[in-house]
Image (cartoon, rainbow, N blue to C red; front, side, top):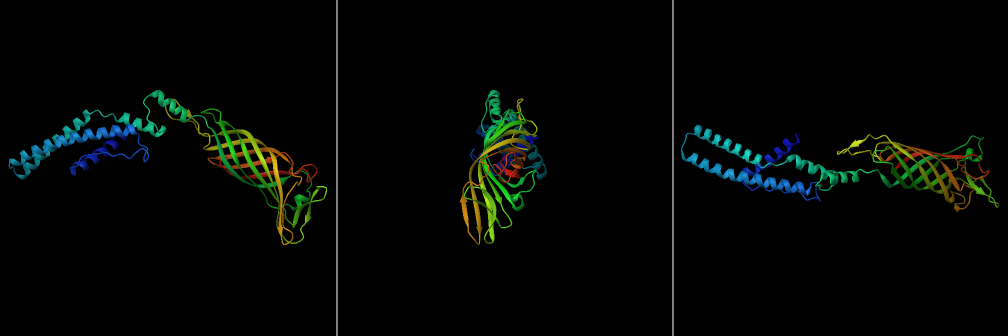
Length: 345
């Protein structure tokens, strides 16, 4: 079917050129403009030039025979009959000469397919296989990601003062993720990377975070109407885990198979750890406004587990701290639970 389409296109092209009595010139766009192989372009141009030469030669001979036919002064019906026979004979002769050129369309199509796959002209099976193996090797990459989640504090103890006055909390994170597929066909891969996480606790009921002269933190009422009261803590995070990809194996020929590692549906589980960079207490209202970067007894180290459900570049994730949000006896047993979406994980 492909052969017929290509040959029909060539024939139509040449027929229109003959009717206009112009020389055929096949000008394919440059490699920068298209994905046509330079080798394929050269072969097709050579073939087009040969066909053009055959058509022009036979056209000259046919016109000579038609002049002889016109000189016989035949009646219109017989003239048209003889003219049709001459045209059919020359058309058959042109077909035979073009067929004798031995243009290997299969070979040209194969060259274009290889070029489209590898963006290079390959001259041997060994070189083709080496390039395919190189192109479809196991995924080893470091990719950026961004995530945002809703955070809650959970515990199995009676509610403390923080639990009774907590508002909307969030976790914003971005960083680089390492993907290390174990082999070209393996659904399994190692994941790791590094990220920067900003966790924000917000208070309701006109409460703010305060601390006394001994560094003890507690919640107190704001003197006025509060607009915002939040405690933001930054962490440097490092995860390590395993990912499973449900994509099917794909065959690219020459007994070479591969599995897409970062596309399709994937499930990942990891453990993470983080170290605190800084904590800032942000308060704004019709009373005192301040941004205090200080120690508010937030845990300097966090660790926990995360579960990711991904499709292509979009991920739904759930992460749960195994460590307390605050250290020591401050708001005991409160642990962060984050549910959100990520791009690039």
